[in-house]
Image 1: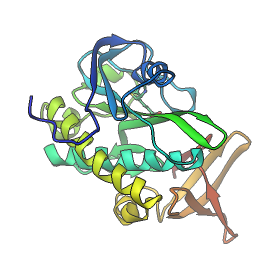
Image 2 (image 1 turned 180 degrees about the horizontal axis):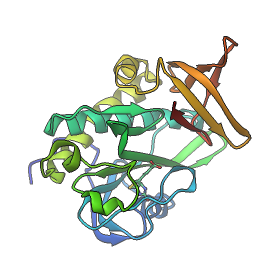
Image 3 (image 1 turned 90 degrees about the vertical axis):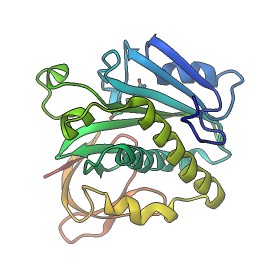
Amino acid sequence: EGLLDTEFIGREIIYLDSVDSTNSYAKRLGEKDFIDGTVIIAEEQISGRGRLGRDWVSPKSKGIWMTILLKPDIKPEQASQVTLIAAVAVMKGIKGVCDTDIMIKWPNDLVHNGRKLCGILTELGAEIDRINYLCVGIGINANSDEKDFGDLNTATSIKIASGLQADRKKIIAEVLKSFENYYSLFLKNGNISFMLDEYKKASANVGKEVRVITKDGEFKAVAEDISSNGHLLVRRDGGRIEEITSGEVSVRGI
Ligand code: BTN
């Protein structure tokens, strides 16, 4: 098609009309031999998955439901940084085609006026000190209408936010291009300090009060910064800085 201008991300594209979940599909591929940078895209997901065991509603042809399957030579504990890279790449990709103001809710939700536009789910197959495959699942509500969200008024789409029909192909090409740029830099440098300023500038949390919700309970704190390995640094009532990793945690604005 000539639209996609990348070196290795999307060298192989698997396009599906319908699938359980592009992340589940990618994991199955990941267990076998696969081409680094393979992208799986589906028109519809029957059981799309979100973070923290949630469902991800993926109506037919309304969004961009895709997974980038990678084989990075990094340690498993570095994998969460790829999620932050994806968040910045998607933000740039969307901004490249339409002029909406988008913010990043740590670690990886893109929001417009406080409503969620995109979610990212990173999953990996790993052994103790090496990654066999890494799936970066990206769900962008592109052309969903209000009715597609039912009672869920915490979600929005590019179409709702911008008033214009979103060109999904163009957005995919832009997102994959910026993902490749940042991901290559990350592989070279081993951390994401090169894009921290950009991430923080777009952050909906840094400098604000947040509610941190973990398995063991929740607490209020001020989000002070993001560390160079992508963790959220928070402080409760003038206490010490605490480092929050994305694993089982959910962060809400207050
Ligand atoms: C979240 O915000 O909780 C993450 C949502 C991730 C959704 C995407 S859509 C493509 C990929 N396949 C899935 O089943 N989930 C991710």
